[in-house]
Length: 265
Length: 162
Ligand SMILES: Cc1cc2nc3c(=O)[nH]c(=O)nc-3n(C[C@H](O)[C@H](O)[C@H](O)COP(=O)(O)OP(=O)(O)OC[C@H]3O[C@@H](n4cnc5c(N)ncnc54)[C@H](O)[C@@H]3O)c2cc1C
Ligand code: FES
Ligand code: FES
Image 1 (spheres, each protein chain N blue to C red):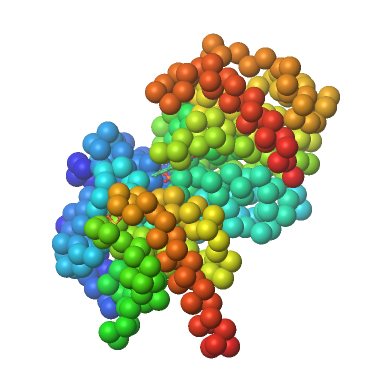
Image 2 (cartoon, rainbow over the protein chains, first blue to last red):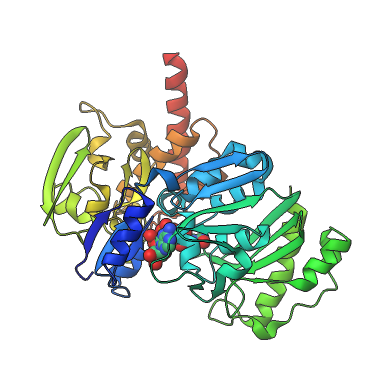
């Protein structure tokens, strides 16, 4: 790992100030992506601004059916929240299947969505729920936030502070794990929200997480796994890699979507 | 150089290191506690698992400066007064190790799992709990057996104490 300087931020303002004073620096949350990448010398930030000790961006708040999850909340806390499971079990299940227990104790929702790995789970969850991503300077819909492979709408120095969403009427998530990395080889999140049915797919798209309008229409008229049987999944925008080719992934997308609907609660 | 202060296995300890020093290297090289191992470069094998503020973490992917101020338990901190921790004893009894390289991480993972879900563990939940730990020798079977036996033993201990 190349040399770096560590700073522990005490508040959001402090973190943003530290970041603007250190242009080549990076925010550090759970470090489960960033420290790993630095070890491989694939990233070399001059400074690290640690967000894990900012109380205001840690924890889950529930008011009625409105859910707010602080950016520095670890995956394990989302997975274990009984209050959240009572109104949106699918997001707890999603968080509980990220990586392994040790990764879940450190890795955070803010780090996961800022990184926007094309095989990560939270991007599908938040796009599927129609969540809002709140930063130090504005609010963005998930549709506008996730823009491509490892790309988001975040500007230079912009920091995610929380995500919010209304608990859906029903939601489900099904993931086909890559057995070695635990990331999604394909994961599908389905939700029946006040704004309509939403279906988000991760691990499969060649430009990252995406919505599937064909599935959304089919489920809007008939919320059941069978409703998806005749919907065509176009393989031309899907990834091919050593784990699976685009045609295989197209089939997985449908199978996972059906399982997600079947499991929805 | 930055000063890092930790409570390790119940004792306050501190040392100076570069900001880029990984927690596992700090523990092994500065504190001389070499029970915690490094088995990979990719945060996948779990040989380096310790407990930080009561939760299992991969110490190869945390900077020592990130951990400063926290309470750490390493494999050396489990056994009390010459007696093995029940999980260690169960690994011995059920042949849960061969070469032993993964074992510190396996044992620390098992203790964390029992701390969080003790008394409710099944073969399936133990296997899921070991997703972040790789063993090149045993085939996992006896590790799972050992963890289930330790869980049962510790549940009996808890009942007896009540
Ligand atoms: C073995 C292993 C298995 C994994 N398996 C999975 C899996 O199955 N599914 C999955 O989804 N993920 C998986 N991950 C990734 C894991 O979920 C990471 O925790 C996550 O991707 C990054 O979150 P973090 O908090 O660790 O972020 P960090 O690593 O600290 O940061 C990641 C990036 O986000 C930036 N960042 C962090 N916080 C903020 C913020 N608040 N605002 C703006 N930018 C920010 C950082 O600067 C950095 O560029 C795995 C990781 C490992 C090591
Ligand atoms: S050495 Fe930490 S996970 Fe392999
Ligand atoms: S006993 Fe040899 S790696 Fe597990």
